[in-house]
Image (tube, rainbow, N blue to C red; front, top):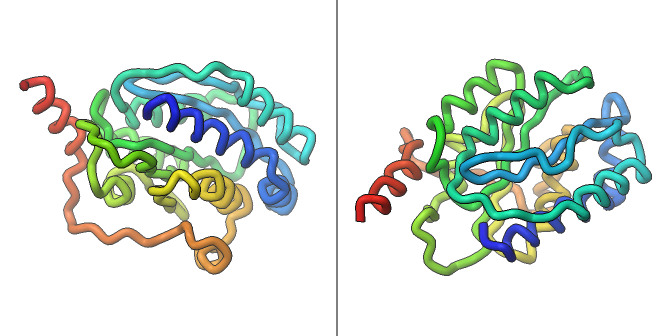
Length: 227
């Protein structure tokens, strides 16, 4: 993502955790609380906001949002969804919380082009009982050697998986904040996707041929390096 896309993404998550909809989802869930960590990643990865004390209402959600807002944004070369998933898996395995459900929410604007093939990392997460959801984004229309036109199909075939996994495609910058908020509500409260579709038309099924080439990003990167 370029700097503007990163800013939009960060603001989207900050505003989502400030929203009444996300707070209601937390309070209305089976336990009435959730734990969250936030990771920004590229070819490498790093934890931006560590595991919070439990979010159990508007005040703790706002504290998490403010902590995220204050963190500097940094650019990281390449796109390694697999490294991000591996880190998220480890963060879930080693944190102090015990939960009945674990979810990794992946947001990105391109296919994996560094690290292990993404299905390897995705399948390892699923084997641990983790659900991987996706937010494939294409906010800019300019040329990008790392971009693919059917990123949503790539995410569906190669990235998401596990119990109840779903994705939300975003192709308009004006949809981004709403898409993040709605996606978090589904992940936290477990609403049926059909209910979200009726209220907010941001969740859509993906049509793609089988099988999908899940190393398309790595192949594109090799071609670019060879030029």
